[in-house]
Image 1 (cartoon, rainbow, N blue to C red):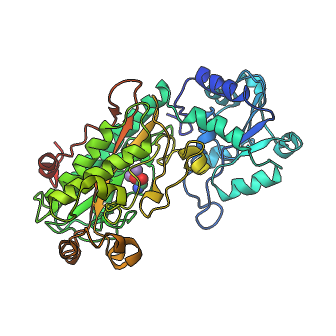
Image 2: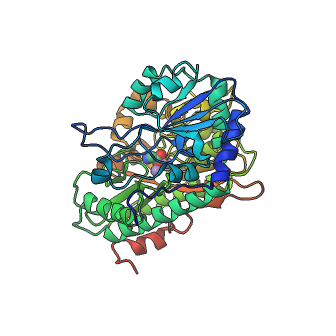
Image 3: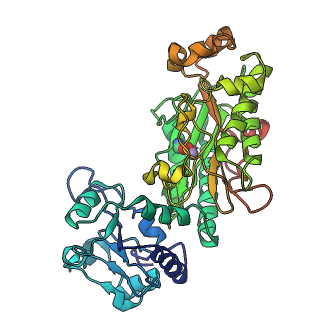
Length: 467
Ligand code: GLY
Ligand code: MN
Ligand code: MN
């Protein structure tokens, strides 16, 4: 197989239809940049190239420096142009035979005449008064300035957001693949989590699976015995029996779609002390939140469903006291569960987050002010085709319990002795995360359901060779 095979998630006709739909809403051309592989140190030493997600969504084949131009009223082919820098004669020597113009056109669903080799990309784009959709990549930001691309209006961004929020059948095929590879990676991580292995051994087992499946990680994997550090990275810590290990990682499959799964389990396979009762609270919160993921439900209410379950569970085990309704209203869960219940998932692990709250929040809705809730990344009404994560957690974060501004208001309802005992034993943190697709009716499809999470089932897999 050639090393430059173009892999696309959707059929050419799908890309034409997406471009036509966007074009029908435009008043001026839009130029969507693919971006570049950022340099690590010197120019030839780059990170792997990953084309911008908007560019991929509208049918751009993964080519560095390319740009997709969509003009108002286009049918998705006429009036759409893929610009790319011509390969140099030496590219085939260093990078392999580049795809031909005809192959690129076919993959993108464009008539061959629509592809121009833009030695004059600048000349071609400048003067069109086009808006630029620019990936989060330093060189692309410079390019956009040089190409005189205007900042897109909120209406232009919303036109894109309103399409990308709802995954079509071809996207869901790719997302099921991302989920399946993510699950395989987590199974390998579970098997590798043996006493005396390090966090990094576990990460290596996980990413080896991704590499074998032509995938890579959709964000930097979190593999840590310090699960209370929400985005903590593997730090060579050796694993000891009885510690909780938190693994939050997902695959980006080979057309760009992401998985994002978290599992937490005891090294050695035996729950110790209070681990299991607190794990069961998180599991109940996760299940309640998943059950609440039905069309028409406000995602913020899914967050509060998880929060309520955590409050009720903490009352049951004597860490909080009071009425769970009142505790939830007051935010007594926030020192323990200091983040949102999840986010959109798609071409990015935090899908559409490059558009900020314009994507995550429905018009007229704003982020809550309260610590913890303010990290909620999504507040829209759920609808068929949306894919979200559900990932409640329960953490003992030493810094939080030193901050009177956060925990002071809950002094009357918190069993501080119990909290301090957990802090003293470095309890860490627990998070459980799955990926769900909202259906028009009924419960959601859980893409990641095949990865065990019941306490006995997951504990039985820890450190056991893969069957
Ligand atoms: N750690 C990224 C996430 O799960 O959202
Ligand atoms: Mn995650
Ligand atoms: Mn997530």
